[in-house]
Image (cartoon, rainbow, N blue to C red):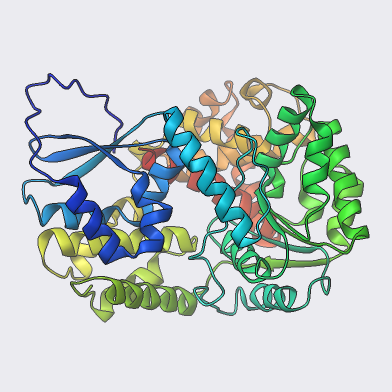
Length: 472
């Protein structure tokens, strides 16, 4: 879905046929007041065109959240009022002063009522705990049972595992567990949930605005601190120094700390050894990829939930459910994305697809097209992941921190494109094809004995294959 700034005078536009207030009331009725108040009321009607409507939201985050979770249901409601509408498009519009004041007031009241700490200054906006990501909604299998039980234990008895460190690849349920812990503990304690990237951002802003005292006061006086994606807290010695002292201050006052990452503590890059040592001093749990049994349970539960909340039953036959769970293996996020495609097909064409049609619908997931992947995209994603620049990757330097990312990028180029070995060599600063062969074989061997390298490859592959294609 592309953002389009549309000219109101465009001949494609005509007078509004849809009563947006009626649509809003129907969304509130069918999707529930909580979801509507939290997300859907933040959409504003802009224009109606021949076969689509244009809505505006204030941030990319709100747009992405709505489109990934509720877009199909919203479209069905709109179509019930105008069958000619086949899609919904969004533009991003900055909030006006009135809306900012209103949302600031609402945020202040919500935070005080829910016992979740927020810094109320306009520039400090923390991640909200998602009420939909509870323990009851988490599907348990052999790959995540230990992480689930440890999270439940921490929710019942803070300080039992401190810190609790959960790690695993993209879409394995780490953020869900952090949210679930936060939901349980906020009933009694002051809870703060924040991403490592947001922590760094607030640290820099506090220095620039000369408000480090306020920064320390908020972060060191919470009962429970949940930090997501700690692997992004790289470099910046001053920031790591502050985090180290914040970490110690919280432990000293008996606060509970829960951390998630995509790799084990000792595999974190450009993070102080003493910080990694503190992480390792608690309980460290690896969340593995879901096996087929768990993937099947997740699909069944998702379909059950949809049937509870929808007027029309979501009917997908057992063979298709089993096929998806057996073929889509990388992570839960991709699994649910595949299921959403099948559900959209059944609603649009009013028919249940068989195995053959499912293969066509999911062809870009099951058989990734080499034409959609470029060497530049692989190199950029690899550089971003390993925190190096492209010139370093393509240089002749053989430092260890450069060699492995270079080998991973070459390996992914071989796996995801149709390029020959000499072509790949030329794309990597005219390296010989024997270097390409060596790189591919090295990574293949490492994948067999090192789960971290497999996680890294999966994360980069997901970035290349899905994230860029799913941007709106």
